[in-house]
Length: 122
Image (cartoon, rainbow, N blue to C red; front, side, top):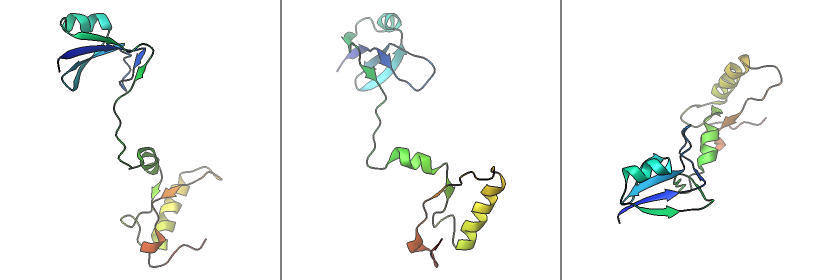
């Protein structure tokens, strides 16, 4: 497979730049930028117009619930590696509450009562 330049309405790169095109050599994206600049850098490339398409990076979620995992990182960790007792949980909640406005929520995740010596009841 040779070199190709793809043009799209939007190419999402997760950087502040908003390129309109990207160049691919073989099976790798090697450059992003303005279409004219890429044409100059890759003069022999085949050009493919993707029209109004929006191109995003290839995300591969092999059933790992990426968004949920990322959100869990914002919560208190109550996993078996982080807490070993109800007292540990209460201590973590108390520490978090000390820095919060009254009435605000404190969220925890990864709690597994099957791995605790005693389960939470309320």
